[in-house]
Image 1 (cartoon, rainbow, N blue to C red):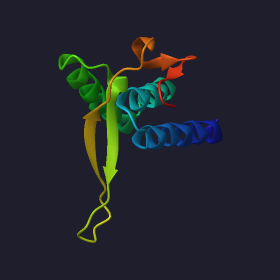
Image 2 (cartoon, rainbow, N blue to C red):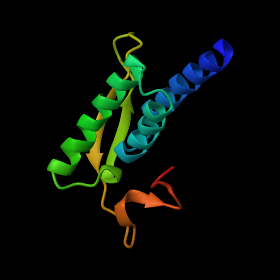
Image 3 (cartoon, rainbow, N blue to C red):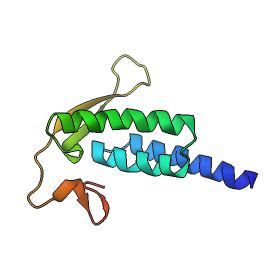
Amino acid sequence: QKAAGSLTDQKTYYLISKSRCQRDVASMDFYAQQAINLRPGMVYAQSYYESVQGLVQSARQSGVHPSQVVISFIEPTDGSQAIDRAFSVRPMPNGMPGGMQNGMPYGV
């Protein structure tokens, strides 16, 4: 039982890591939701999920679907290891409803 709990925790961390590496906010949200569904009581998962939901809400309040919000990663120039993110908006492809394609977020 303890090993199963440890594996569940590791999978939750993996899903959060996968979410952090996505190139659009809808994909980030998809993996953050998978993580919180797997371990709803994990404080780290809850905190991360809430931060992603803030990005989703900001996009929607701006009238943009989260799948249109593209994330670019900016490598530091000062020698630090912290990688910054930049956000931009891409036009929605014709006929692409809600940022989902075949049950997965658009772009995954």
